Image 1 (spheres, rainbow, N blue to C red):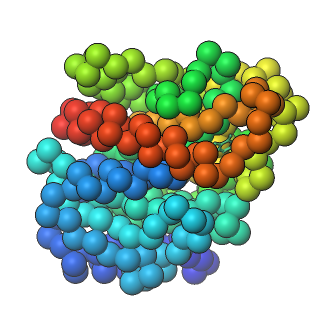
Image 2: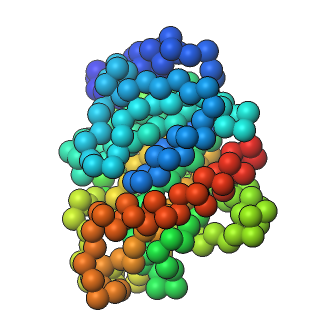
Amino acid sequence: MTNTPTSANHIQEAADYIRSKTNLTPEIGLILGSGLGILANLIEDAVSIPYEEIPHFPVSTVEGHEGELLLGTIQGRPVVMMKGRFHMYEGYAPSVTAFPVRVMKNLGIASLLVTNAAGGVNTSFVPGDLMLLSDHLNLTGNSPLIGPNDNALGVRFPDLSEAYSRRLRQVAKDAASEHAFTFKEGVYAGLLGPSYETPAEIRMLRTLGADAVGMSTVSETIVARHAGIEVLGISCITNMAAGILDQPLSHAEVMETAELVKEKFLSLVLSIIPKM
Ligand code: HPA
């Protein structure tokens, strides 16, 4: 095995460093999207480790994304949370974007909640909707699993027929009904970015069966499934995708909508975590 940033010894070194900072063995991983870092406030007795301290960890660059790993409990469940994630558009190799998922697996997680900000492709959606991912379209043109496969981490050809766990989606729906809330549900198209899409691309995505579009999540999910981790994905629909409304898209709009839904998001996650 070549000594790439994803090789087993690098994963082990990163995980060992994290274990030297806390005795907590996390069961659940959380990866937070743009503007949703507020979820970090839910963690009790949190130990915070800046990414740059962790051996071999990449460092995030985009505005609105922070870079720290938090370990603690939510509703009594031990969790590890990535506050800030790595996108391929930042220039990282796809395998590097996946490194933290493998470290979380080494730490002990069995399930992963991934959240993201996304554009609504389905015209019945409105900004502020929360969508459970039923599936994804990997349109990044790449895969985090490219390269030699380490059989200790997962099989060469992992099955993705249930990329997003049916069981966890039901858990989320049950939690939502306690809040008299209904999730949207649909297919997330993951693109490379960092430009937003053209109206023609959005029409294409709709034809392909996409309900939402974003620039994250698919590589993390692929690595998680490779590692045998159950995945729950939630998109915050922060804007209607390009060409649907007669207005330009902006990162400011994405952050504003995420800000508006954060309380709802927090209360739902608080109900979901104990049942994951
Ligand atoms: N397109 C891609 N990524 C996004 C969008 C969008 O419209 N909104 C938030 N992230």
